[in-house]
Image (cartoon, rainbow, N blue to C red; front, side, top):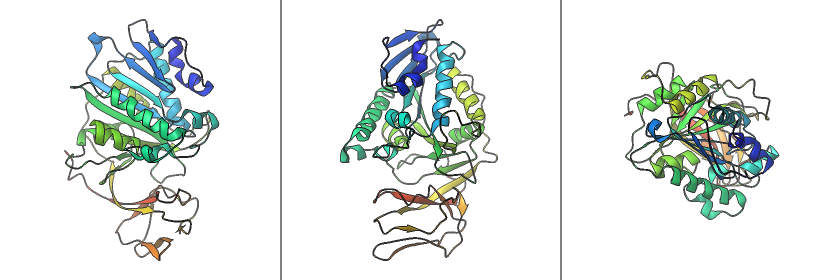
Amino acid sequence: MLALGKLLELTLAGREPAQKIQLTVDGVQLRWLSEGALEVRPPEARDNGSDVLLSSGIHGNETAPIELADRLLQGIARGEIKPRTRILFLFGNPEAMRRGERYLELDVNRLFNGRHEQSIGPEAMRAAELEQLARTFFSVPGRSRLHYDLHTAIRGSKIEQFALYPWKDGRQHSRAELARLRAAGMEAVLLQNKTSITFTAFTYEQLEAESFTLELGKARPFGHNQGVDVSRLETRLKQIIEGNEPTTESLDGLKLFSVSREVIKHSDAFVLHLPADVENFSELEKGYLLAEDIAKTRWVIEEEGARIIFPNPKVKNGLRAGILIVPTTDAGLA
């Protein structure tokens, strides 16, 4: 197998490859761009005009997505997967991956859409580099653009595999993309309704990609992901890469949610009135006191059918400590 197919091994070892460009036996080019970043380019005659960005390791301890990306890249390097798309593989936070930590000082996935310019340190610099790598990759006009940012969650979830779909004013969410997600094993999609500072928000809002944050299960160490079933997603990604994806328009069984409110932690006095082991998508009754903060700030559940995702009272002040979501329909899809 080509040495560049071992991008994960190189990244975990902190090594730079001696050869920056290699070709497979059938003419697929692998090109090392920087630490944790590798572009795959099919032969021109086989290129179907699609660009696919697969990012993982934005949080360094979320290893199942990293291992999935590694399997795909190794399959390409061995000639077992024959791409018709251009692909950019990105491991988001290499040093956090090496340490087995979510992040070192700053959550990289809260540093996009200009936020890195307000911060200092290696993770702010990495977010800026990731933006530039994505901007360059998606700079070729006339090509379709897809970005899957692969994650696993800190906590368990009543709906284990789900996606977050960014928002941009004047742009409609795509029914076809939701059908693709359903075929890839996603059980639910959160349709966002405001701008954000995540990686997929940047590629969706700034680079016109169809972009999704995919949550695939619970975070576990390298080699301990037997309980995270990504088989349907892996099959669909191979089909996307090889350009032989079956057509599907079915949303059957896909649960859709919209954001009702974000719970923002303003101070160290913030209290979240939920058990430490509460699961994503836990339902909350109307009238429930969810959280309190300084200046008598209170979050009381007013919504019918409200659920909580990503509850985390330990975030830094000023950041989101949870999202309140409610069921929605497919009425606004394009």
